[in-house]
Image 1 (cartoon, rainbow, N blue to C red):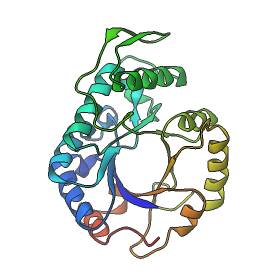
Image 2: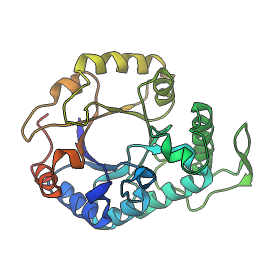
Image 3: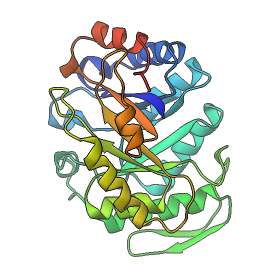
Image 4: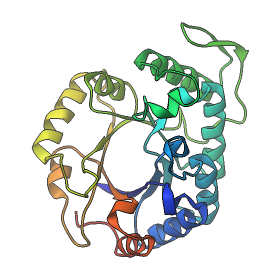
Length: 269
């Protein structure tokens, strides 16, 4: 089991300088990753930071921890632009980027700008286009949603064959999608900080996930949750989790209180 923090960069945490400070403290305290929310929360009245700009600042302030999103609504982006953005972060960080990918859970972030929330077909094709661009090959693609006419991305990500893609969501389609890629992200807590995902439920979902896995290669399972310093999360590891992502958001308290939790270090294995 590895340990990271998942920061809701909304409200008071929308100041990117605060994320940089949290990330520095997380690296010093032994955490393994910093992931952030990716929302256009200003569309529903909440200040929000751009995750990729904020993570670029974190990349320059840290040297070891993995960096990524939990999760990006991929269909809000053009796949060629998102592929370039993630590749740039991967190079800037020395090969530490992770793309958390999903459909997007807040409909307002689409409808406020005149578009409908798309379905899984769009996400699947966008991820295929991005992976093809990260390969370094010349890409020729004509699909239902996107066209790429003989384009080769440069510079490429450091990580090969691609930046890891972790898929979020618990619907059957999301589990099938996660099985095709490199990992699965699942939210395990509610707004009040109570764990709603039991280890037994996680184990059942991991079994279903691996049933759809075409290969026996490594597959990360990242549980977003809430723990206290020194508390054990062993049951989730035994259920199949490979990552614990400590959920940091304003409902847990002030920025100072969240900083104290980060400084206290990862939960007990």
